[in-house]
Image (tube, rainbow, N blue to C red; front, side, top):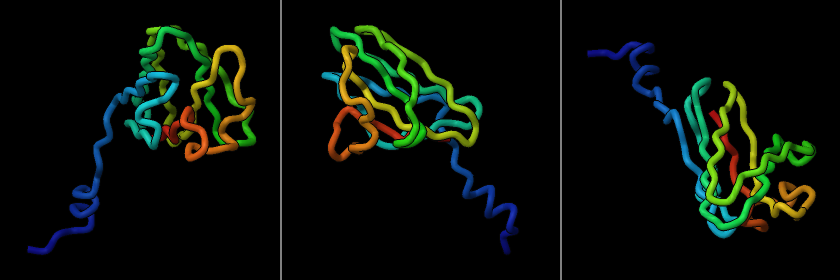
Amino acid sequence: MATTGAAKAKAKTVTLPRTATITIRKQRPSPNGEVEVEPGMGRIHFKNKDEREYRLRFQKNEADAGIDIVIPAHGTITVAIKREDQFHFSVVDIKGGESNPFVKGPDQDPFIGGPIRN
């Protein structure tokens, strides 16, 4: 029996998870590569397992100054992602650190992760 185009498209549909968790240990995010969640409803939980707080810096690209959010020691922060959105993140020392860690890239800076997308 022949398969219609619509049936083929439906068979290729990938179901993405509603949530993903990124765990921080010794300032290193895990996983630190691509994380993909469901569009519109997707949530990313950042769990800090360390005894110290960090800044989570979210950036669209290396030209973007980004935004920093403090994640407390042993704390959790949940971020929602908009449909068709994507961003990178880095775990930055609360006292300062690299002004734009995204420029180095994850191959040279183990504290960088992403992209996070849907």
